[in-house]
Length: 187
Image (tube, rainbow, N blue to C red):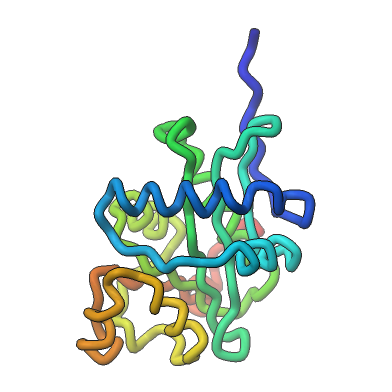
């Protein structure tokens, strides 16, 4: 029997049944890597799905991967967050497909917004670089207090606070559309 293709799509309310699996997969991955991750609630992730601000990957009915986006600073910034691939689907290039889909969704919804990502993972840094992100200092990111409150659930939050939000374990990466005006981005 041939294995079914993994489909990557914008999540909607029908995908809420996967929220607890998504949250568990994110927590398990953070434990394995020994890194911090901002904890999100079931309601938060479900809302991202309802608002069309999430990407989900499924193989049939089986959860394969996820990420979500959010605008900050009066829609001048967009953050891509929570990128996760279930262990059964790792090593297949799925994370890159999900990351590209979230990038395209961000560019469609907020074409002039700067897109940023905070990560401690080398694979995400590589994907970001391929999309045109560059490493930046934290002060080049949004100053929206709501965004920074989201970091409170991370085990590294004390470092962020001690460094006055200028440094943490994560690397800040930014895509500035004004620097890519002559490129033909597929969105």
